[in-house]
View (cartoon, rainbow, N blue to C red):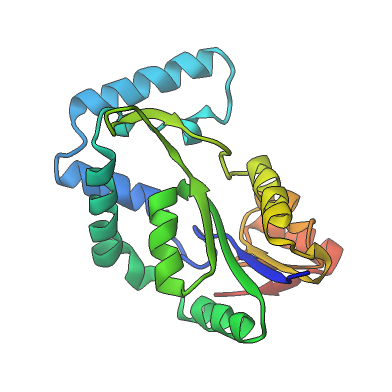
Length: 216
């Protein structure tokens, strides 16, 4: 069986910023996302809020609806190069390199957009990247919905279980690195959970459980 090191992205290897929020502002500045897109995004959010779909905000990708998927991927690559890559922690990159040299399968697991995760994967020389896939119609346009598992909070547990089945991973000898208390659900699955740049709640929980706590 393989041993793995699973890294969250936003707040963990990328400190103090959210990759998708940076990309969202990038699209606004380039006027690729318009007022019409924002109104549609807000309408979908309010509609689902009234239906008590609490976590739907993070699943709501209607600011990208009807955009050509390949164009969005191209813009993501440019945004990553210009505004995101320089914020990746050098300490995180050293830890990833150390674990890869030790024979660990390096996995990046994040709720951010899959094309963004792919940029991180290449930059960090990771083996696998798992993000949130955008649903695409027959014309190659984004629908605004997500396709498959939303790898956020409890969705990360589902994603990890899928990875275990696909790659024959031994979780008892594996590591998980994350920064938020919401990530505890998947961190508890591994033998070596590590709280990174920990939020107050995660730091408290990690201290109680005697987990390793580090800063990237």
